[in-house]
Image 1 (tube, helix red, strand yellow):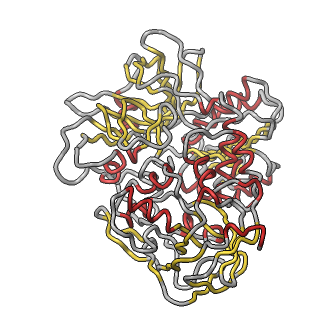
Image 2: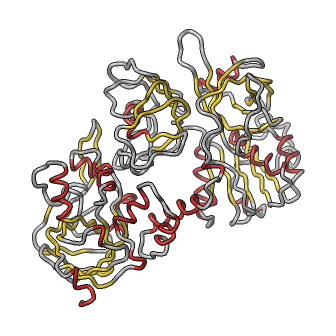
Image 3: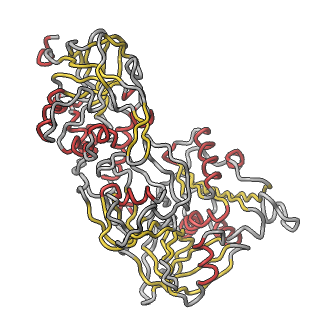
Length: 584
């Protein structure tokens, strides 16, 4: 014990537990276990938590790497002074152990401690989450914990045992790299993600897998500062475009070719990206905004989109009112569903109109005479429903290492098996395996949600690494609302008094709403409209709410700890400055 004598006086002040409960919050009900309170006597610590304790959100807060949350008495005193609050109840920060000593700046990832007859290992800093703000009645608390370098940390349980208030905390081992909790928290959440720091962090085996994954992504991005996906949009807002021509592609699909009204060339998009089309309407109606994949880049100066007529207002308006010579507005190409440039084989899996982004990728490969092996698998209803059959066939013919498989789920009597399509039924991963596609390829999926969900699950069951499965959803993405179970409902105008402020457009949801000052952020407005959103901290820390700002500008209150990339916005802490359009 002599080597670690400086830590001998650290001790447990309180052991706190709490089970998940439903708590009212902003007109909703949150399921949370953040309300923890001291318990007397000795308590058994187990691999996943402490007896009598629980986690409501096991994806965000549970598991062996986050078994026991620790916070320091000294930080209590700091926040009482900073926030001008009276003495806070122990367990107020959602921690299991309130301790005396072990400040975040002097505790290192991988350090081991004995408390009672249990042994613990420091695994990661606190997860930034809005629920600590809920408990503290201060929504900015997640950001304050990070910016003031007082996050607290989690223990992994190395040896189960019983502990109690008054137990001495004995240091029994040191973690590698000597990377403190405060510094590794700042490396993830604050500006200045230096490469040496990221490399050091990844040399710490005890660091939890979630944090290692984040640092791996950040390191990869830092080594490719000019990677296309990191470049800002080619232009801000919208540009006026004229429809050069409209062509039928199938029974329900039409292509629209756009060129700039001023005749200037359009920058090349990345294969797989989309544009947002803004279509003005008469009668005082707000413009329609819809996202459409670029199915081809033509003549170095034109974008082609291909749209299936369905029940949606946007597709109907395009098909019924937009023709050659029509003028609309387009955003710059956006989106991260883009073709990678490594040498691994490529497998394209699409269904219906989901062919459009992967067709652009196929065109790109054919134009470069790539030597990459390419597998092309597409599903349609029947021959009349299949778009781009001749174009895809011609492109594949230019790729010597390509194989194709076409499925018709309901072939017509006139459809010839072996000529127009290869198999009846729906596209499956078993069929892709049978055609020889390798497991180590990159898989690009686009189509209906049920199609992608099933294929993703089957690819993972096959053993394909998640990093090699790439998907594109035409509608809103999956929501992330930790602690809230909200029914999926159609988007709508917010209840209550209508706003008189600038127009806020949620382009993927097809909704335009005037801003009202009663909303504290764009996130709150989106929630009031049941627009699917993603968030966690709600205070400008985690960037889960980041989305493309297609048009307009926002102001932040408070300022995020790290600004989003150019052309994006953090909706959890921003409000519109004039009309804005968001990719939500």
